[in-house]
Image (cartoon, rainbow over all chains, first blue to last red; front, top):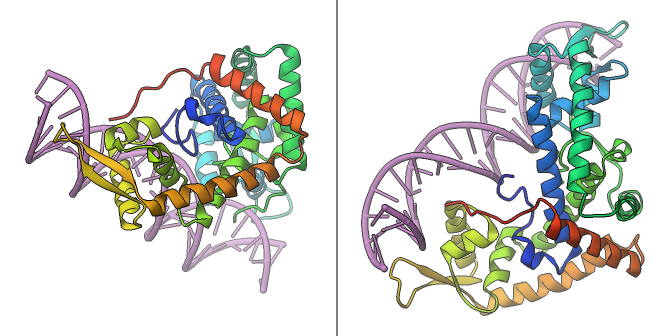
Length: 158
Length: 158
DNA sequence: TATTGTTATACTCTATAACTATA
DNA sequence: TATAGTTATAGAGTATAACAATA
């Protein structure tokens, strides 16, 4: 975990006051765990974001930018890298000659499946301090916050 | 909220699978809420981190670096800024002539108190989709993860 | 006039290195 | 030999601007 992607400030001792601090602390470690999973297959989380989005069918780059909430220039780089690794490829769009569809390749699908396996393991380990019931409860509570909270809709970059 | 401090990737729709994704999504918004609180008193979260640490007594810079998990050069800048704003000041350490104690000033204490007030409001609003019982439950579950989980001890930068 | 993809560029944040002074 | 503070600098990551091609 890099410094201060832990969010806000400070180690656990003083996180107890605002639940939000605690939330950030735990989330930072979850993020870290997932980053490690991605690293194990030689990818960054964003690469997996793209592969996951296109695993059941192609998507044009602009849509990927929107969905993954990254700026267009970043998506250019990500797709370049995925092409270089032979995990995905750009193909011209049938009707819109401006657009490029990003298709997943067999090797890309393999990566997705391996990461699914690894991240299920990682997730199980990460939440192991909680019972199955507690894990369900946590999931429900977070879902409520994500749905009803001020985490509203999203407007994409350009 | 800046893009991808949302963590990992993607908007809420697909966050349901791994609780960790959900966790990150919600945490990003909590972080954002707190950043807005800090911004309302003209500070960054890290400034408040420093002020909070020294509100009940001075601390030398190196300790602040450790506690807030930021690199030494960052702490130099933060304390410079706090001094420029008249919220804190450096004073020589009594016995160790290498060290500088960072003391909070009256204006700094005022800021801390105002932020406490504002962030209690913000917190209440943020977690309002949950009942008081649910909020307590969430706090307990997160505490368990922070305490027993792989969020282990910390080794400070230099 | 707006959108897609790309390049180039700026800005911020994170991290390291090197140095002085002191322990 | 190690620690405290500072300066300088390198490197990622994030964001904007501008352009050509197409809608």
